[in-house]
Amino acid sequence: MSGHSKWSTIKHKKAASDSKRGQAFTKLTRAILVAAKEGGVDPDLNFKLRLAIDKARQVNMPKVNIERALERVSGQTGESWQELTYEGFGPNQVAMIVEAVTDNKNRSSSEIKQVFDKNGGVLGQPGSVAFMFKKMGLIEIAKAASVDEQMLKIMDLNVVDVEEEADGVWVLIEPNRLKELTQALTGAGFQVLSAHLIYRPQTPMPIPEAGEQKVNDFVEKLEELDDVQNVFVNL
Image (cartoon, rainbow, N blue to C red; front, side, top):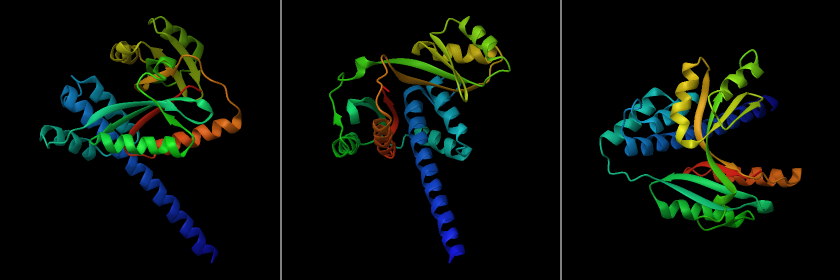
């Protein structure tokens, strides 16, 4: 029985892992579709598409999946994908910005509102929490042997801020400089791990540890929706 139980557990974990992997690929495909429809299918000319493809490669999305997404755009399948942004308050009055990519605005709005309504949140109007955040570019680079020296060199590039994190160095910049600085850092010999746009809280809100877990659970429920791409909170 113990062997059977162990095998069942392994199968369950693998199924959950495969499910999350499939959902991640679905979200990344949508990001590629939107970027390609906005700026063309050539990633050398469309930086937004380059970021979407790089993100897909980071999670080992098969090359064929990326090519199929670009073919769907080139083939003019009639799909109508769009980016949407939602604002609201979650548990403990934590402010949230939710970014989604969808082909059905009514479905997305209904599903996101349902998560807010059922889990102690309130979905707000546009502008209700946006003023609490600032849109910025975030470039993550691998740590060098001398992190202090590395950070000083990065500051010379006139960035907003540089922060050392456990898994790398975060470079915060004005959003319109994302392409420029990504290329500059790569050209300077730094290993760029990722580059994307974020909403950074202007004044992070401290809450008790128990409250933080509620917020994490809330965010996880939002991220389980296929249409949701990113969730930003002012913690």
